[in-house]
Image (cartoon, rainbow, N blue to C red; front, side, top):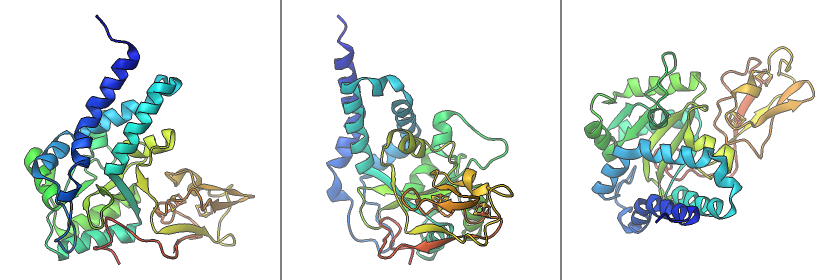
Length: 293
Ligand code: SF4
Ligand code: SF4
């Protein structure tokens, strides 16, 4: 006999939530001790997440893009609850290019293993580009060791300069830097994602459904109106921002402070050099704090 669709949806949510509930039950293992980064998840959990991350991403993509879920109050509530649990367990924080570079350099200074491989969102969506960088998933420490073991050939250990050059290259492509970790614990940095905005599943889920995939960074975009070339002549910023935080102020470009995540992606391509980043007073990083001043 078939169960009702509501019951089926509840079962699905329970099944999807199981590994996360197990993860949530082990916060005591994520802890103290390492000076720069803390990766004290149990090894079996690291192995599970690193091996099947693309399947988690595919599930998030599915849940965020199916309109029928949000047309049904009960299913929507379950999915919203699940997404809140996921986002509390694993989430990210936005870094500027300078911060991303500092984090990478700091990791090498601390002797932490750094590797990079194909973005799990690309793998989840089966979108491998011929013209854009695909190997944007930069992993650290024990987490990197797991990826190198799980996916030999897909992930490669990086040297210091190679890693720094890659971060610069990702920025030129308009990719968003964000460091991901678990449980919002200080120093619990696992991966520096360099996300193509149209590929990134957490970004799309956040924009489309409000899932809180990551926190804002420490900066805000500010625009010098006098230096702006004007939207008719330029207007690059309007399409460059992954968060739709750039807008028009009359004929000039401007930034919406409430919507800005401080990624800085709009800075390097501002043709009039009219956009700069300003540090928000008191803003703190969580995952990258021990590697970035
Ligand atoms: S306005 Fe600029 S700094 Fe702010 S989120 Fe958009 S691209 Fe990033
Ligand atoms: S990219 Fe810079 S110069 Fe161009 S419209 Fe935007 S703020 Fe003005």
